[in-house]
Image (tube, rainbow, N blue to C red; front, side):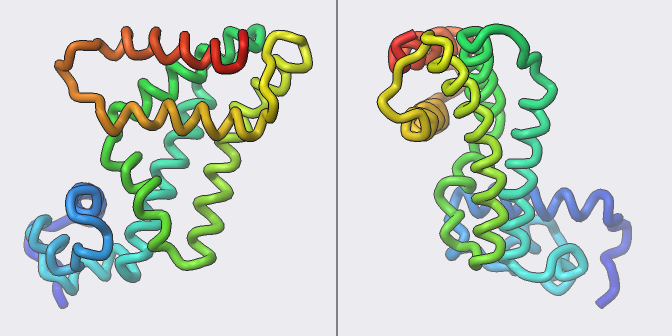
Length: 195
């Protein structure tokens, strides 16, 4: 099937991923067809297969891109300093980064189950990589006597779940600014690890 006149791979590919992200987040992966994605982009359904092997591959690409961008953005942060400072930076970074990506965050938690074993393992490995960065901060703080948590791995998962949960209720223009939410969550995390 010929490419639609005026279409370009550097434009159409990102439009397909953006449409799939919106539709999967709004309706759920299982409920969205490749035809719906194509209609949203304005191409024929067959054209999608120039950009992705199948619907699961498209979901995998979206989830992997989200995790790759999250890890790369954290790598760009200034991660020096004492464990307490690094923990605060992590808390504020996680909230700030994810509030700008609500659909990607939703997919990362709600649609992971739709991946086959190999793709699931790849995304889980990226998630563990990110979790390990927080876990290292907590372990260093505990070793220095700054933090106290009965189980560092559990504390890591609980903190990430709490921070990611902001995406479920936050609305731009609500009664709390992003900065104020960061302040409140930082206070809660600090108290959770007895810092």
